[in-house]
Image (cartoon, rainbow, N blue to C red; front, side, top):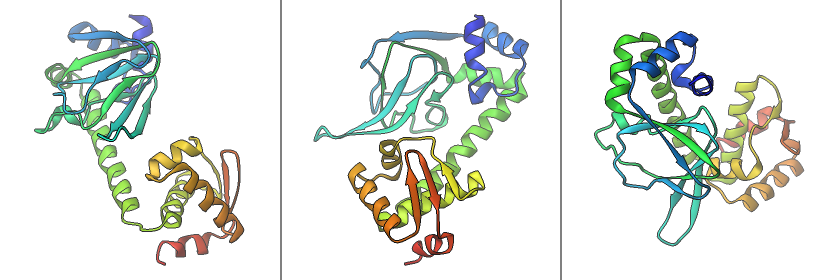
Length: 226
């Protein structure tokens, strides 16, 4: 119980809740903990989703698998992170993607009705859920904005400008690999590398490892309107 509550405190749903609050929720909520081996499917696209899943141990990926066999990783989940939180409150409550365990993983599942019951007795939990859903909407809006850009350079420039605003520095420290960055932007990894090199040659940026420095902020912003 103690280890579980410690992991749950990493989860946005339980942010700012006291240890007693977390323990009380666990004691009064019906939930299920399931174990999955590496490569095991947790949920398949179009499965009905009636519970949120919280990673307690291990890791998982949210993948879009196409009929051609092509696979795109949409998100990677580590302990404390959740999935299904948007779907369970939707009238279209089916998984839009497949969830796959990428290690020896334990996942806590809490049914929609149990979440609603817990929210009635703990307003902090309700506030956290509302914040989470609001953040998801904002993130979706950013992705839609990125899709509106037509060129690779515009997509990369938009990403870098968002990070510049977030970090408040022209020296941007990425928290993702190039492959993960390419997946976020919806572009091939080799194409991302080539365009970053082109942008460096044009004097817009310089980069090394996971660090990217914006050299010409005005020109980078102008890229979005080309």
